[in-house]
Length: 456
Image 1 (spheres, rainbow, N blue to C red):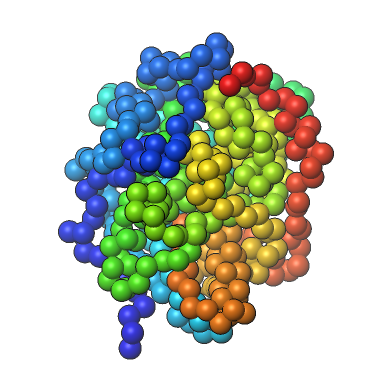
Image 2: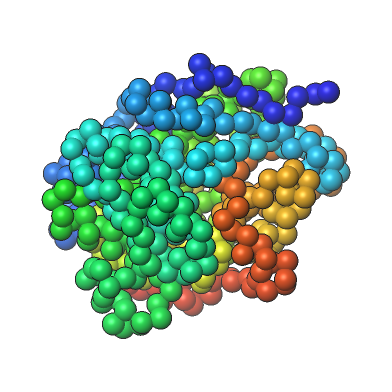
């Protein structure tokens, strides 16, 4: 029987992360500078030092192509890496498609998603520089769970500000974080000035990643022994995730094929970038004709409906200004079940690639997402996280197009996490209770009125 699962040995574990900043100039891309939220001037390392350890600040601005992975980080990675690349033969048959469909499965990590790839690295660098405590935000709880696991590996305390709607929708994510030793509070919370201000105006505010970021940043800024840790968006975060795509390239060699289409769900950009950036390097430097598709929810359509301009990464306007596709930092997303995708902006590197036409973007509604996820689960046995299921949906769409054309095409997507803690969302779908949210253009326009006035 033909192989379905393509596995690497621990000896094949990549020893360096790939930094796409080294190759962006070859694509005609010069990333716009990150600006200070108060002065509007480009920020320097000293401006970021209250929030991040210097090693991560150095990685954020580095243009070196390869950044060596420290041995203590590799030692933790070996608990679950390398992860499998799997050909979805049963799903191909069910879809009656000539397409070959592969998925990189990141759900085998201790916390069930791709997030530990950067969480472990960030915890290591913080511990190395003498940090005692971390703060962070989390949407669906995948990032919070990963950082709680990673913090425990390096004996760090952690406080997680979890978006309130997800805190109530996904209680077992909270339990997992607390099991690892983290303190978890629903955001907006009464624990910070940012949270108290929002609750005073709207006690029933469901929260957003932008609000939770504001709270976590404020907490870190006022405690000398504390740093802030972010699970997506920033350059160093996306770089740590490239271990996914680097492994996948080796695994496609074992499979004797190369992908024609690469797909990843996108909220802030980390799992998409981690899977696709190594392949995009080949597209930029070798002219490989990959189609690369970023999939977002219609309820939070930053790439497909946002404006490419400078904006804050958080609601309280405490973070540096980044040029990105944004729906506006005051954007309040509907309470969809893909909580990790409920963000108003996008990683600067991803935005620059989209602006140059090197990647595509597609927005899909949540009922279609769950339809695809259930279909996939019934044939491949893995229940995808709602976020990851966005990639499943577009993989299905592309496979059906291949059937219509009678064309063999190789489709690869990142299945960035399992949905074992998201079964309430599946219960709602199976009961016919899920709603689709198509974020109205007028609400996007209203949020964009509050963008900072920056001359570029």
